[in-house]
Image 1 (cartoon, rainbow over the protein chains, first blue to last red):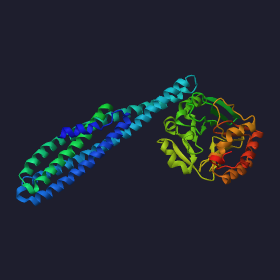
Image 2 (image 1 turned 135 degrees about the vertical axis):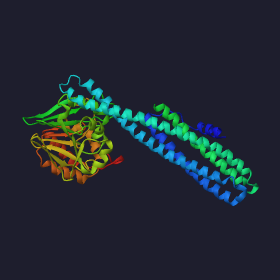
Image 3 (image 1 turned 30 degrees about the vertical axis):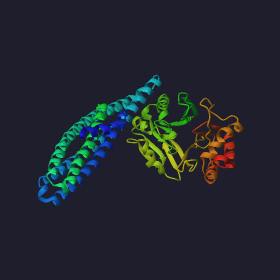
Image 4 (image 1 turned 90 degrees about the vertical axis):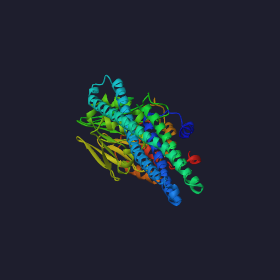
Length: 213
Length: 247
């Protein structure tokens, strides 16, 4: 089911064909959406806790699972925020890199156009400084991409627990009796659905990150 | 990009850069001006991003980069100063002189290194080595915060958009047939300039100056008697018109 949702979401993804500085901004936006979904997951955990309490002893096995749902939501929110911040920083570095690359391009053109100028060497220092700046930005850019990549892998592996959590929730829901069963199965569906959507955003972001490397 | 010497004496030189044949046809042609004194140079309305490499290549043929210590932007338009982000890397120690009201806007073009020197509404002056240049208020012509630069010694008034004409890149440097030239500048002044009051205020101010050359940012330069012809024509012109009212 999780896989199906991911595939379904992928159908609506636009083709990955961004400039690198736009791609970084798209990743930030995707992770922002993931944070919103994770907040909904947290609401699901509160709802599940209320249903389990009303169900009393019949849902005794479900109550500890609500803590896990909460933890999953918390981890996802924290990680999404962190990745979002990383992507936003990467977007800023990318924009600075574009400006720096652009300046270098312009200076090279000036060296060609004014090659015979007696003062052309007065631009050497400026050009060297721009090159150093460009190299620093490139290093920073690569480091931020690596960091972003690692964080996305970590969050993705955390979300694998969501499948187990949903399965366990369904098992426990079946013990809760007819009155509460549907509500608790709905909680399991919500967990699975939210995790699926977040995973789709992460997968898309990972694809974009791979184009940046 | 052509370079034309407008004035030279023992203290300073005025150069005009323009008629860039390599520029894209969709981009309006612009005139850039530079005053070179003993140890410094002031580059006025340095132009848009598209023009930067041609402009720097032209400038560097005249002076070493470190000599360009001052930039002037008459107002905030992209054809005036959108190249700022690149000049900021080329001339990190330079100072940009521009109307105070535009500082927060002009910085959007990218300004990490250059220093912003705001010009007060009433104008003022800048001294480069021993050369004194005056900022003449030209607000609402067309920008709401706008200055001309006047050189009393050279009798040159860099008038920004005032006197501008829309014409081909191969146009001559100076106005010859004034009546014919009106056809190239009338609509621009009627449509771009918003206020008759501001216009007449400026005309009165400039009539008190001794101007031998009136140098706009687009089109040809007015020289000698053409300066008075322009002031008379501009004074009589109704501005702030759109659509059917344009004549």
